Every structure is written in structure tokens, then in C-alpha cells.
Amino acid sequence: MPPTADPNLADALQTLGCGDGDALTIGGLAADALAARFGTPLYVFDANALARRVVAVRGALGPRVDLLWSVKANPSRAVTASLRAAGAGAEVASLGELHVALAAGHDAAGLRFAGPGKTDAEIDAALQFGLGCFHAESGGEVDRIAAAARRRGDRAAIALRVNLPQELGGSRLRMGGRSSRFGIDVEQVPELARRIAGDPALRLTGLHVYAGTQCFDADAFVAHAHRLVGLAARWEQDLGLPLDELDLGGGFGVPTYAGDPTFDLAAAGRGLQQLIAAHDRPARRWFVELGRYLAAPAGVYLTRVVDRKQSGGQHHVVVDGGMHQAAAAAGVGTVLKRAPLLVHAQRLHDDHHERVTLGGPLCTPADQFADQVMLPRFAIGDLVAVLHAGAYGLTFSPHGFLSHATPAEVLVENGTARVVRQRGDPRDALRGQQP
Ligand SMILES: Cc1ncc(COP(=O)(O)O)c(C=O)c1O
Image 1 (cartoon, rainbow, N blue to C red):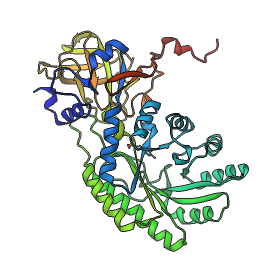
Image 2 (image 1 turned 180 degrees about the vertical axis):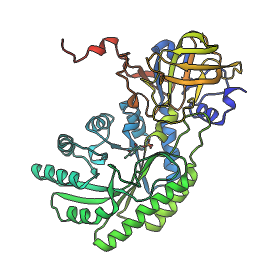
Image 3 (image 1 turned 30 degrees about the horizontal axis):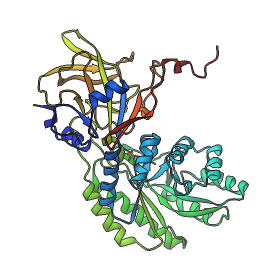
Image 4 (image 1 turned 90 degrees about the horizontal axis):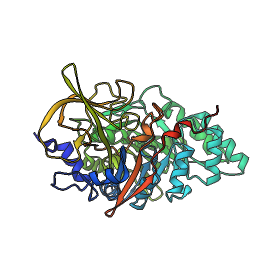
């Protein structure tokens, strides 16, 4: 069976605008030529594909939803700028990400800052930049934001991230619905909301929920949003406070490994639009925040075969990239390891397959993309392409391990390619070290 007969692979290639030819193209440029020009390992992002993702999601969610890009998924300035140009706002989770968003052209007043453990220095800096809104994760954090705002003679906008008692069904990695450092338990919200409303250094804007990533169940996502909206209505009544801004979270799933399901964007859009229609009002703002769904399908990780060998009667292929740069593709964080969406970049439709283990140069068995899986026959020098690699790539990887240089990142836009993150240097291993 040719690899592209797998519907997830066929979809992934289509997203990149790859035609029927035998060679992988990304935004119209041959992966082979990109690898020859920029070297490997290499991340390639397709700006036009990123823009198409934003348009598709905004189209599905309708005009009342502001779409936010979760910078954590890929803190590339160029990717963030491409998504901004296509109409996505942004949410950040650290001062570093705030800098990326600003460098990508975002206005601080439009940014939202979520995530536990915001330090006083981060809160101060965010206020100094004129951050739009903090998503508070605890009462203590609210107090520290208030103190910082007071010190500055400022007023800080806060939305409360709610830890709903229900889990987000259908998601692979759940971050709520139980005791959690993410969000504030429902029972604690009313008192905290009152405290914020009574503090002249603070302004309560609304509520936020984000309870899991890799959600493949659109109905479960919509049901979760319903719960938040229901609570907002109840608390508005009980507390007499407006909760105008509702961030319904994100985490829409993207197939990453062989056999993964797909997320029904149209169904999620329909469900959210119905929910919004029932609870809308002029002052209300609705948000959805997405990382993976926007960026993963628009990125490819290219790595070249360095070695082949036989051991214990099995074929092994060793590539120049690995888990230190593409940890998610290597299955880090998953229990049952499966191969990522992976193709032979120079022979897409080759059905001359062999059972092979394919891994990188790290000194750990975990550095493995495929374990005795039927894959195209890769020779030394061939190019392996990991698809759906545009999110949680380098940023989610232990790139310090074994001190390899970090890969370059290239953005393809309207038929031209440019480096948007320079390749590292092996001497970076010494950066900042003292004898
Ligand atoms: C608060 C928050 N928002 C958004 C995201 C982005 O999630 P995803 O990339 O699955 O859409 C995450 C991911 O962990 C998150 O923690």
C-alpha cells in the first residue's frame, strides 16, 4: 500500500499544498531542495497553510469568536506573525512568549497571559508592557497581580481560569476535572470574583477554561463550553457582576501518530455557534485558543538518513534528527508508542516497504520514531519527513540532551523560503558556561 493511501497522510500532504508528484513539496517548494539549501535537521513552516488554518477555524467558529494563537505551541516569531496576519490574536504563558508575540507585531493590549506560576517579575513586566488580561490560576496569583498593579498605580484586568469538576472528554492529556494546579476550583470562584470586583487595582473581565489537549471529540468540547457558560450565567446572577469575556479554551486534536482520529471542526463550530447565539449580548467577547490545530499541519520536520544497519535480524535506520528536536513525534508523553506521520520525502508513492526501526542519534532507546514498522526503504542520504510537526516541536523537546546544534527553521511563503530561526552551532553547548 503506498503510504499516501493513509487518509491522515493524504490530508497532511494536501494541507501543505503537495500535488500528486512523487516528491514532497511544502508550499510549492521541494522538500529535497529545501534540505539541500538549508541543511538538516530542518523545520519548515508553510505560511500559506498557517493562514488557511486560521481562515478555516474562524469560518467554522463564526464572527463572534476571537481566535487566539497559543504561542506555547510554537514560539516562532515568524509563525506567530503569519498567524497574526491571518487574523489570530494570541495568548502567552511566559514573559518569553510575551516578547515573541510583541516581536511578531501583536499589541500588548490584545494579549492574554495564562498559565500557573507567573512570577512577580513576569507580572510586573506584563503590566509595564500594557498586557490586555491575565488569566489567574489561583487566589494567591490574584493577590500578587493586585499588589503589582497597586505598586504601579495601575489597574490590571483579570479573567479567572476555572477548573470545572468535569474532565474534558475525548482529550488525550487532561488538565482539569480533578485536583489540579491549572485553574481555580468552582467552589472558590465566587469569593475570588467578589474580591476582584471590590479591588480598585483590579478589573474582572470574565472566565476561562482550558482542560485538555489533543481533544478529538467535538461534542465533548462543546459540552465543556456549555458548562462554563452555564456557570457564568449563574454567577452573574448570584454575584451581580458582569462576566463579559468567556474564553472557551481549545485543544482541538490533530492526528500525530498512525491511525489517529480527526477532530470534527465543523461540528465544534456548529455547537459553539448555537451556544453563543443563546448567550450572546453586545458587550460579550468570546475566545477560543488553539495551538496545535493551527500550526501542526503547517510544519514539517526534515531529517536525513545517516546510517543503516542490521541487528538481531532487524533493519535499523539512523537519522540526523531525533527526540531532542521532535520529542512529540518520537512519542514522548505517550504510553503506547506509535510511529508519527512519516514519509519518504523524495519518493512519496513508493510502495517498496520494509519493517524497520527508525531512530536518532541520542543515547537513549526513547529516541525512536518507529519501532519495527513498515516504512519506505530508506537508504543513507535519503530524506525523512515527519508531517504535522509544526506544533510542540523544538519547543517541547529536550534539545540540550547530547548537545547537538538546534535545527534551523525556515518559513515558506508565496513560493519563497527564508530562514526564520538560525541553525545552532555545536559550540552553543558551551554558551554561558564558565571554567
Ligand atoms: C492554557 C492553555 N491554552 C492553550 C493551550 C494550547 O493547546 P493546544 O495546542 O492543544 O490547542 C494549552 C496547552 O497546553 C494551554 O495549557
